[in-house]
Image (cartoon, rainbow, N blue to C red; front, side):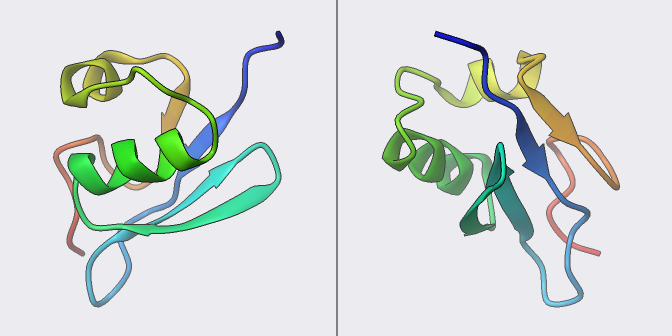
Length: 70
C-alpha cells in the first residue's frame, strides 16, 4: 500500500486544525487525540499520540504538533 499524505493546516482563528488525507478532508482536530481519531476513521490505524508527534507522514503547517490555537 502506498504511503498516504496527511496535512494539518495552520490553526484556525477559533482553534483547531483542518486535516486532510491525500485529497480527502477529514474535519477539524483540536488536539492530538482528535487527530488520531480522524486518522483512524480514515483507515490509518495504530497511530497513538507519540506516533503523531514524530511521524514523517504528517505535514504540519503553521506550527508543529504542539500548536492548536492561533
